[in-house]
Amino acid sequence: MDMEQLRLLNACDSGLKYAEQFATLQEAWDKCEKGYWMLWLAGRLAGDNQSPSRRKLVLVACECARLALPFVPPGELRPLRAIEAAEKWAEGGATLDDVRGAADAAYAAAYAANAANAANAAAYAAAYAACVADAANAAVNAAYAAAAAYLAAYADAAARGKILAQCADIVRKNYPVIPE
Image 1 (spheres, helix red, strand yellow):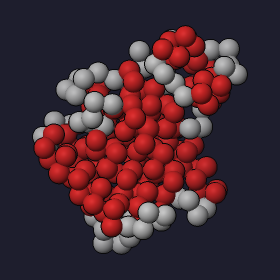
Image 2 (tube, helix red, strand yellow):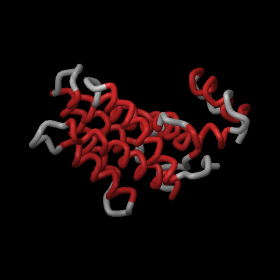
Image 3 (cartoon, helix red, strand yellow):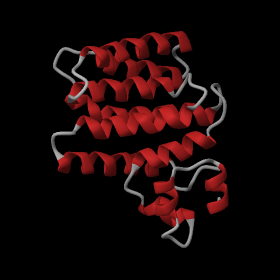
């Protein structure tokens, strides 16, 4: 993959500007600290809903979304259930209807939470991760799962940076080379 291909995939301006600093896109990938950019790219390259590459993407987005779970209020299980349903689907043990129901419940949890608080962002992270399985635009939902995990730590700048780096490490662990 080269810069022109990245442009053709409609990468955001800030992502393009970041990538242009490096000799190769692989070098940019290796040094990236923003897991949501990496998930977006992996999502743009993932196959259709039933492909093994989409299932892998769902698992990676779920792993990133799990970083937001510590910010969910005790006893609120809808975000966790959404992540678990998506993981189960990716492993062949659930239907898309199961995932949709769990994602809807996680969205309801997010709606019930104050829009400016961590619980809201954490619930959205789970819902977005679940929607990667079903959405036409897997790239956007995968990126949102990681971004919402990052936003769940909104009160603590150090935690936000840590979550972004953890998401990037999760993506790199699963995709050491930029997906084709």
